Length: 292
Image (cartoon, rainbow, N blue to C red; front, side):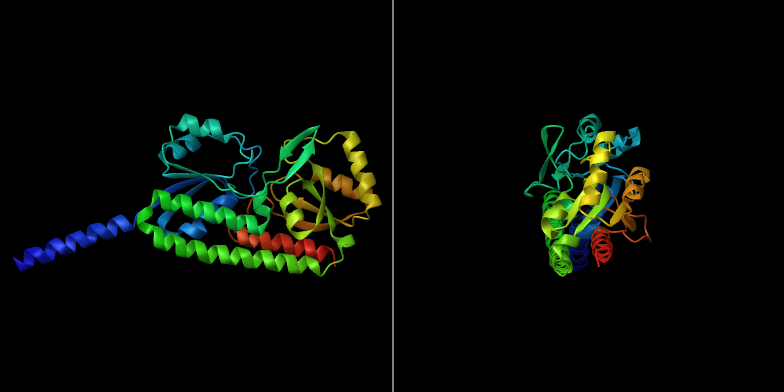
């Protein structure tokens, strides 16, 4: 009788352990979200990212395999704010029935005027404080899908969020030591609005919020005049975009190359921006260094 009770208790313990060790199948829209999910989910998640390292989330074209992956997912994490214009139809077509997490929920949005329209800037993660909000939303979504691992997810999430708040404070200090007149650079497209607002750096961009937008000859001429008037000395390429147009504009103004930025796609593993925190720190360092 005691042996039977022992083995029954042992088997029940194994069942409880197997329940608590649930691994969520998570699909994320692009690489930065994929990394945040991995950081807070750890061993409790298996992550598939649709738009991988060096990929452009604005122009991505999904495949039937992507739809199938979403259909099998427990959780799908998206940015929202109009970034992934291709994603809503993909989710509907996939038959997805799991937990949808909009990582940008609750951020104070930044808007700009484009072609006479007010457009919401979707690149909210380029402020580390907003990145912390993304992590909070993702942890909440993972817990809703896997309540048995709530304690572990909260612990990992709290540690990661604290790291992002430290990075936010560090970035503010990094730029506060530089005169505001020098805090201005040229980039390929307008992906740094939240970064600009948080860290008081001014960005001039060849293209608008989406890399699909095209600059007219008139826009390019006006930008060249502005760069000269503002004495902009440095231009940056972005890892996910063709740098030829920004190079042409820079050559017409005398601005010098400052390096590569990672505003909306991580580098491959082993690169300088293989995680969200690495990408953020890299962007701050190379921008700040160019102003010294």
